Length: 260
Ligand SMILES: [Fe+2]
Ligand SMILES: [Fe+2]
Image (tube, rainbow, N blue to C red; front, side):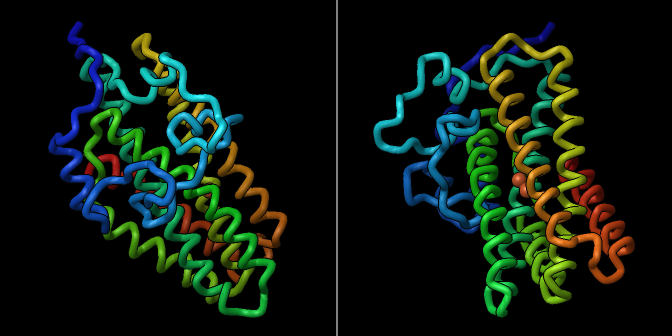
């Protein structure tokens, strides 16, 4: 069986250069407080109760990472070619998806924050804040696991912003229908990935940590889905058509990102 030896991520590998070229920043996120993600959002602090906190800046006074956690967050595990294909696909698609989610909420917030419905703007802001944590963690995972980011960053950013702003212009219920459709697809997608990680993976602490992070984010997405339904997503104009088009677009985006 072909195995790569574990190693700490090198500073200047080609995929890092590619990541930079697809980001609007001249340098990759530094993960220091005040730095920004590939979705142009500020990197939030981690909540020590959540697995993702291992990838996020820690608040003053929070316990430092243990040696095992350091390994889990900095080493690329030894992988067979098939394992590598699975891990790369998971991380590339998820990073792109979280980038898209940030831009959808960015677009929705840009419209809703200019209207009179402050409650809806705040709801969208709260969900967007969750997505900032997701993209920050995946920016770091893509670096750790030496995954080539999708070449479609600019396209996803533009399309996601347009989708968010466009549905928000149709009204609060359409914006929520967009959230419901997107989060349904993403929640299902995280579940499929969790199944893939249960099969033949190396004994390395980064793998169970990745499982925990995907589970945490899947639960966050399902919470966003519940928020959308509780806020009348299903009473949006042309709800069935809107949902089908958006969910179909998300599935197409996932398929494209896994290849490009
Ligand atoms: Fe997300
Ligand atoms: Fe979400």
